[in-house]
Structures are given as C-alpha cells and as structure tokens.
Length: 425
Ligand SMILES: *Cc1c(COP(=O)(O)O)cnc(C)c1O
Image (tube, rainbow, N blue to C red; front, top):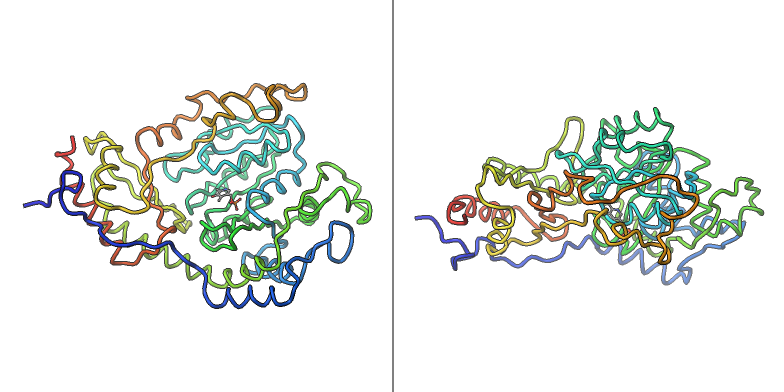
C-alpha cells in the first residue's frame, strides 16, 4: 500500500532538522581578527590621494578577484545594489534614457536604473532558464534605449552571445547582474565577465559572502575609473585627479571596509568548492525527480554550467492534473524545506504600477526629459506572469546545509506526492 500523504495526516517524508548553510571557517575568523587588531577597519579618503583606492585588504581582494575571474579590473563595493548603481552611472546613462531589464530578478536590478532618473523597461523572460529573452529585448528597443541590464538568474547564464549581438547592432551598453551566478560558465568564460560590466553580490544569501558586499568587474579602463569615482565621492575627486568628463560624477560612499575584504579573500579561495558541492547535490536531485510527469527540472544549456543559487522547477498542470498550488501545499506538508512558489515580478510592484518613485508626481516618468511611453501593465511579460501565477516552484538549495541523504528525502517527498497526485485533485 502507498504511504499516506502528510497533507492527509500521514507521516512526513522529510522529517529532519535543516540548518542554514554556513560558509565561514577559522580562516575567515582569523582574517577578520587581524584586521580588527590592526585598528584600520577602512582606509579610504574621498579625495584625490593614495587612499582614494582604499586600504591593503580591499586592494588585495580586488587583485585576487581580478585573477580568479580573468578580468582587467575589479572594484569592490559594499553591496551588489550599490555596484549596479555604480555600473549604470559609469556607462553614462542620462535622465530619460530607457534601459531594458528583466522583471524576473531582484528589485535592485531595475532600481539601479531609476536612481539615475532613467526608465526601466521590462522585457520578458524565456521559459527555459528564466533569463531575459533576446527576442523580447529586441521588441522593446526604442529610440530611447541606451543599455541592457541582464541578470544571470538562479545560477545559469542568459543567452549572452545573442544579447551582446543585439547590443552591438543598436549601440547599447550591457551590464550583467551576476549576483546569483558566480563561477558559472558560458561558452568557456565566466558569467559576469562577458558584458561591458559585470556585478557580483557578497550578501549573506549568496554562494560566498562577506555579510554585505559586492564587486564590479570590467575590461575597460575608463569604465573602471568611473566606477571607482562613483564609489567614492566622485565630485570631490575629479578635479584633483584631472578627470574632465563630469557626466554622472555624483559620488557616493559605496566603499567596502577592510574586514569584509579580508573575509572576501578567504571566501573567494573556497568558491569553487562551494559551487561544486551545490552542483553535485543538484545533480543527485535532478536524477531523482527528472522523470516525474509534468515536472520540469532545471535546464542546463549546451556550453553552460549551472551553479544552482536556486533550483527552479516548472509544474505543467495539464500533465499533472493538479495545480501547482496544490502540489506545493502537499510538498510543504511533507516537510520540504526551502520550498517557494513566490517571486517578485518587478513590473507588478506598486512603484511601477502607480509610477510613484521620486516624490508624488510620477517623476521620472512624467518629467519633461522623458519622451517615451513605457508600460508596466499586467500582461506585458506573459511568460514571467504565468510563472508566478501557475507554474513556478523553487528549492533554495544554497540556503541550507543539504547532503546526499537530505536530498534523498526531498526526492522521496516528490515521489510520494507524485504517486498520489490523483488523490490531490
Ligand atoms: C542578491 C541580488 C542582488 C542584490 O545584492 P546585494 O548585495 O544584496 O545588494 C541583485 N541582483 C540579484 C539578481 C540578486 O540576487
């Protein structure tokens, strides 16, 4: 006889304690302690001075990042959010310019455009990898479009070659939001290093972290300089440094402190290990559930690797005969940890729906400098919307400490629910 589903009062398939993944070890403790003992917790000056570039740990961390990712420049910042703001400012975006972004990403991807008084335009995602669809990008290009911010979501690259070709055709700059995909490969290169600028996150939820932190990378000397300036009080530095291009030289304090940089150095050494561990566990999970009818496991495209920041699934109700929501409830009842079906689809946020950002009068959309007519109506991104409405589920496999045994319990939970789908109708 089949086991009774937990949702009907049966035993849970996953009845284990799970703990948050902790990437910190004695190396990070020692590195942090040494910085504290040195008394120099940050060594920046917001003026043209040798300390404009920060202290020894920040510089060492940037050098190591540069070596690891095989780029020319790395600029450490205090978050990926600030890194994205730095990047959009550096490429010279003007108020009223349109920048194409994905609605299926973290809010900061699009906010980084808005802070420069430019207009985020949401193109739709493709079904396979949840990344921006090049066809939809091209459809959304107008005479105002100046750039694309492309997210490599969940650990897998977007179709970067095609996106770069579109960008070259229309003379657009491209920034990769690579927060979720460190060490992912795309046609032999690391994601985040293919566009004009790539931005990484080091926040607590990411593969490696420094509590809060981020890194911008580029092979372009001028963009690197402009990012360093915006990171650290550009307006007070340009004169001393002899910088004549004043476009977007409004500076911030987006500086990474020394302790975070010292921890980052140790975390970077372990990145490959953490990534490989996630890939190995994801492969076991995929092997266990890939044949369940109506369930689609993550797709890994040719010449790509997936680093599984998340493990996205798609439920096809036509094949299961049971709604995604009902399956989700049944899996939760089985004790499944880290299971989600919600995702913020950005154009549906109140800020975009009501076009209330700066002040109450619709700025920057209503400003004289914006001549375009962007729409954020429900329906503009049907694939993204259908994902949250009825199709998408996700296992946050990077959030918790899983091992092969616990992955097996997850597989058991899925199989148990799938065996009893007819009872869930
Ligand atoms: C985490 C994340 C960010 C923001 O990173 P922070 O370092 O927290 O600012 C941006 N984009 C994506 C896709 C992310 O996952």
